[in-house]
Amino acid sequence: MATHISDEELTAYLDGEADAALTARIEDGGPELAARLDGLRFDESQLRAQAGAILADASSFELPSTTPARGFGVMGAAMAACLAIGLGLGFVMSGKPHETSGWMQYVAVYQALYVEDTLSQADGDTSRIPELSAVLGRDLSPAVAPPELTFKRGQQLGFNGKPLIQLAYLSEGGTPMALCIFKTTGDASSISQSVLEGMQAASWSDGRFAYLLIGGEDADLVQRSAAHFQTQL
Image (cartoon, rainbow, N blue to C red):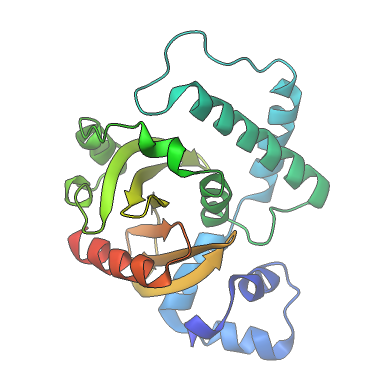
């Protein structure tokens, strides 16, 4: 079954490094596994070009002199810059992203930089939700009041030229968590749990959008919250 195949094994398959037995298991894995593979694929030529541009611009990068968008802050801008430079360097040196490929791994690396203070000053303003919903083509308003999580902010990121929406939360214990949504194609898939960059993660697809909920080490909380979001979105 798909849940018995790790992201590392899927990456080996995508890289042509899987043996015959693993290849057979993956190719017989059904629509859920196909959706996970879709989330791990990436455009290597585009990422190499982006990495080169990042490295070329790194020496001249400047933090914004004006007040950044509410809830993000100067530290958030610096964090995003460091992430971009780090990903660019890692890709150029290794030839592929660390551990797994695709947008979910990039989200995981970004989320690994979050601490409670990253979000504690964000005021939970939901005024951008209609705008983010319009960008994505999916009503996000049901995602702002999940049980056990406090909504802190929403922002638009991007991957391969397509919008990637991040909704950020703090758990009752102060753990940063994020629900990221990316428009995709393929079959719907049920919730699959994994560990990315040392954090618990749950991913699923409804056939039009792929979802990733990630953060902390509480697998039960991630599972419950993912089940809630799946029924609401």
